[in-house]
Image (cartoon, rainbow, N blue to C red):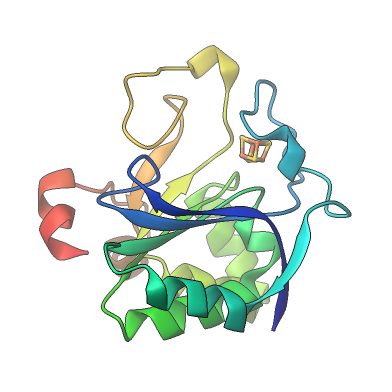
Length: 174
Ligand code: SF4
């Protein structure tokens, strides 16, 4: 399946726990002031690739512990990302997804959009919410502003509200 990306990073250590293959999707509606990645906003820009091509790259990335979907806004392209998530789970890789939407907003979207629901369910760790310049904090792990949360999606879907990710526990668990 085709998808539009801004690029990939084969071995990142800043986009979630451990060494990760990162897919930066193209297109973002949030327009956060101070966004670190403005080139990803325009859905007409970027590069068209396929899930098959990305999965071949991931299969060759032997050191990685997981996949990160970043952006741009990954939930604009939930179908191809879900295919990648499903296939990479077979390699025992975990999934981190960044979104400018909050977990609560994604739950509402998922209620009427099966593709959003599937991508959310395949995500282990969600970094949620827009980047807010006034909340900027460079000491935070994996995110840029204090309003953004690290959400343990599996636990959150069971409990029906956002359960924050515990680094020690999830380090072993995802
Ligand atoms: S959600 Fe992310 S990519 Fe989109 S504008 Fe905000 S910081 Fe930039």
